[in-house]
Image (cartoon, rainbow, N blue to C red; front, side, top):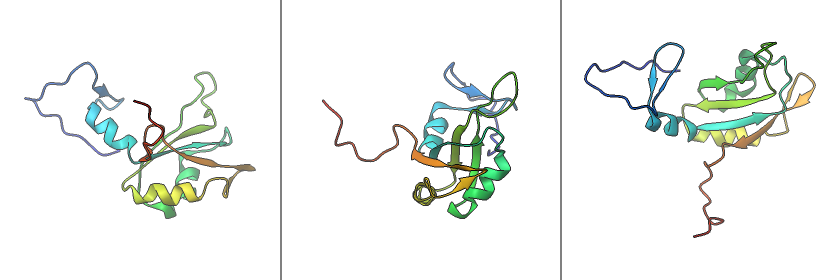
Length: 124
């Protein structure tokens, strides 16, 4: 994740997110990151961030990987998000869906919800 410098004069609202390193992520930054992410599922519960980075490194520069974990065991839940530096990396990652293995499982790659450019199915 990129480092963000807090500006003493900038005000943050309640919707801004402060992570574990006290770095502030504004709603705009969160939206920008979700535009460059994919949802991955079918992961083994023992999968690590390093294994996922290795699997998707040829798609482009990875900024961040988010793997939710069980609170009691610390194992991942079998799904997560990969945040890329560039949008073209998403297309490369989507092409890998159900074609790559991690452990003994196929990894499914999907667009992050709300990201698709095809708005033809929106009702007004």
